[in-house]
Length: 67
Image 1 (spheres, rainbow, N blue to C red):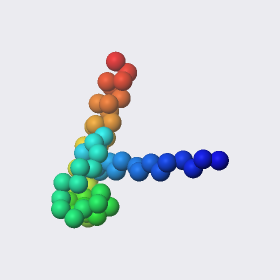
Image 2: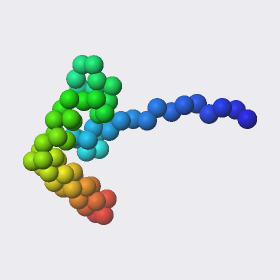
Image 3: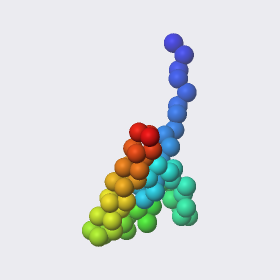
């Protein structure tokens, strides 16, 4: 049995739906240690705004595929 090559998952940016994490801050390895993501997730208003943004993006994406 031949070993399968390891595939590294592409981290998605939680603040930009559908886009990869571009490691836009120094010393960051992905969304899990991104300071901006942490700030947004710790703030109730920002987190709610992000949720509304993500829902709207999913609706747009669904409307585009249905057309």
